[in-house]
Length: 553
Image (cartoon, rainbow, N blue to C red; front, side, top):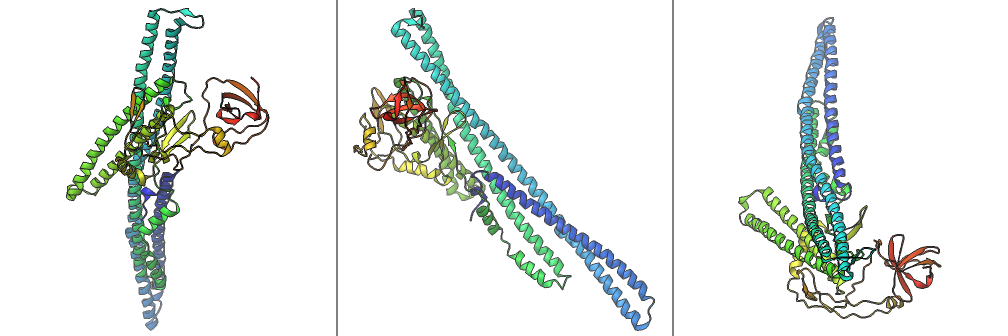
């Protein structure tokens, strides 16, 4: 059987559920109004019958004999029917209209309580989400400024001059620059800590909002079940009341009784989930995008590699801490399972939810870890590691920058941790420094070099630094169908080596190519070979055929 908590997530699912519940409330309100008006009609009928009975009784006094006796029987019948309809009016009001009105008021109050909690958690999540993006921009800015400071310091130490005027500098001046760089580095450490903390708080807020939404959906489903049962009981009660006094409509009442007996809250909820449900929950976890990961950002390669290794080590420590926290929840879950009477169903449900939240947090950390390993492999010209997380990491663009998102279906959240455990027995070896690649010429001609199979390393040597990896990355053969993936990129600044004007039209055939038209002016960033150049056009970086342009620099 489907449930609300698995059917109202995608798009405006929560709003759709709110509209559905509001529609059910309006229906009950209309039904209560119908019952009240039906009782009022009976009151009007009773008033009319009372006038007729009084008139008939007055008329019977003018009759004699058997005619008078027959007329008096008619008066008795009118008075009896009057009393029956008076009882019907009172019963409809007491047994149908008033209970339904009280039921609707109680349901609205209960539903508004859980909806307000859910809305509050949603606002908190949105605020934390925006705060993390602000922290990200601040972190990137400070990293860029620190990098510029280090480069300036290195230039001063090398040339012993400063500025465009080449003013000589003393050791004291160099000491001041080093002190300034260290202060900026300390400030960057604080900014990075704030960024990591904001990432955790964003995820915690998302999980809190998700839990509140689950509770809201469960409450709404319970309320909907009760509402449908109340409607069913009201219709059955109405039929029972009317059936006792309206013989001509007995067949219609039987048919209505049969239809009322066919009402199934479970089937109606299933239909609501199928027809207007928007789909199950699809969690969207915001990952960390470090300045060092983007090779478009200007940074010394040794410092970029060193910073990445520090970040990777930090994430691995966070993973270990989160695993220990999860083990505590697992121990509590096992205790509940061994002693079922120790807690109620709600306690079991809360522990299960805590396990899912722990797995979600671990998935986010491991996805961050995998992204950093990929960036480190790319700058080290090492094979790119593989992981089951790669299928769920997606990129998107907000108003100012590109963001990375982890989208793992709810049913796969805990399974991802099982997959991780299954790969822990793999052996690893250090790959060669060079990663097998195809030249652009071989790609264009259709010839593909055959790279040697390799294993993703558990420790990857690079000079004196060693990078430890987790057990979430499995061995891989380069010939197993893996393909290079390209994404549209925006040029973030840097040096152009030339400019050229397009002479002929060319439509991009691959994701890393530019579509060009005659008259376009391209800023050339690299002349790869005689056939293909790389450049920037309208904020997009890609390659294009060199024979289609004319160098204008």
